[in-house]
Every structure is written in C-alpha cells, then in structure tokens.
Length: 113
Image (cartoon, rainbow, N blue to C red):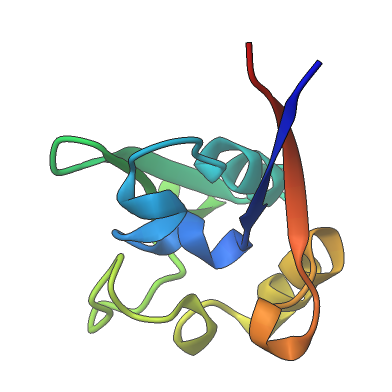
C-alpha cells in the first residue's frame, strides 16, 4: 500500500497557519489530547473556514478555570515557546521532539488509498 509521510511539529497545533494552513492532515487533536493527559484542559476550535487549532490551555482550581496563556498573547500567531510554561514545553518536546531547526523531525505515516 502506498504511504505518504507527513512531517509536522507540535507547535503547529497553536499556529493559525499550521498543518499546511489547514489544507490537509491536522494533528491538533493529538497534541491537545497529550496536553489533557497531563491534567490540563484545552479549548480547540476552528479558525476561519479551515484551520483547527488549540485556542486555550486551562488549569482548573475547583470550580474556577484559569488560562495558562497570558492575556497579551496573540493566540495562534505568537510562538507557543514564548507563552507556554517551560515545564509543559519540555513535556511536549519529550513526547513529540524538538523543532526541525533544532535537528529533529517527527513524522506521521498517513496511508493513502
């Protein structure tokens, strides 16, 4: 069976132009599910007509929900390395690898019919 290899970075789940600007495979749910497995909550939504991104990362303190993304953040445009907690970034990099520019690439095999 033919296969297509998709190179991607976890940061794309926070990027309005990530995952080919929404024109193909999207790994936002993979990244968000992992963040939620660490005890956070995520808010995911469409941006425009075809982009699907993480809009917020939340911690719950009893009935209160607190965003861990600073208010001044230009969400889905700013680099998540600039606003996510370093500990969360380290966990994301451990799970998914570092940026391509730093020498690591993660791939997702995608079967085509």
